[in-house]
Figure 1 (spheres, rainbow, N blue to C red):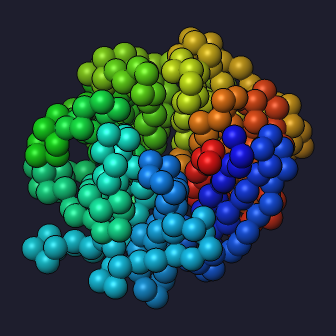
Figure 2: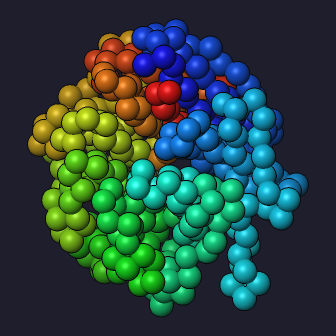
Length: 362
């Protein structure tokens, strides 16, 4: 490994971190897109050179997906804009919440999840995106609700080997999957509780905060829900709670170790009505046995009272030989671990509200 990069999207711009080879020392460059909310970031490492993405929202110009092929020195956007509904859709993109490159055998395919709940597919490396009409025209769409952050697709999880299979998650609609390249979609929420609904076991309407999976075990998925942490061992057909052992089942992010498909990370909060870290401590929780047991990771994380939550896209891993783990908080702090979460160092403090983080080893 020669370098790691860390994209930090905040409510007022993007910062880019670069590390030494050991990922112990970090320098920050920014802000880019000052005063724009950067709700999604991504790094595509499939080509000859990495391509960075930033999904920005300007109160004046609206949303856009920018890309950079020189590690953030310059950024580009198509003259006509990167993403926008066709006229007959009768909608406007409010924010882009997720940018997700497809597996390496689909080198130019990049997905985006947006608000209102919509999935977008690019076949030119993430320069321009087309609406996936099969999901937009789904008969359930009129009944999808809006979470506190709006109605949005915030997770896009392409299957690692089957290009026709994609899972998405939204607030509040739940998990949907396609097996025919996006032509048709089915809800996949069996077992996920929705206590806030008249029927607590609905076919759809669950408030999924984040999905995660691992290429080595594509049928195993993890979900952090609005009160509920779940695992599916059959590709999303049935979900089972894995919240025992956690101080709370409420939270937003969930991430999987890049090399150990049974190792998963969450950041618990007290509850939906009290969105602060449990015990007022900044603590990432890790399970090494697919959610059977959990441990609090503490070494290097602040030991003073902390009241800043972590949002759904502000926890990630990199693919280093010894995995890196990263977490950004709503009080503008970012912490990094170069040893899979055993110990942590502070990368940034006093940034604006951190919305999203993504890291990659180059």
